[in-house]
Length: 89
Image (cartoon, rainbow, N blue to C red; front, top):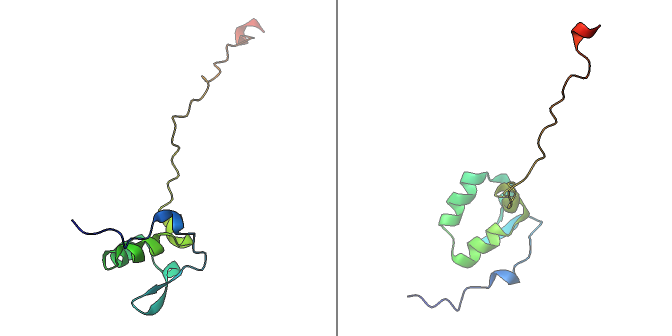
């Protein structure tokens, strides 16, 4: 098993709002990538580099989960009974 001491803990990362990361000596603007581009790029990165990628604002918005974590309960729909029947007129 590899020695994992070189991996930076996730709680030390902050959201990068510039959407620019240093990858292989070049500044890369990740806001130009779509989901598949981000995943292809992450394949070629080390763990620390991919964590920097995933903590950019653009990437976090791409993979944001919008489903609720709890089951939503809605009240029963009100079924109106006719208060006045047409034939009573």
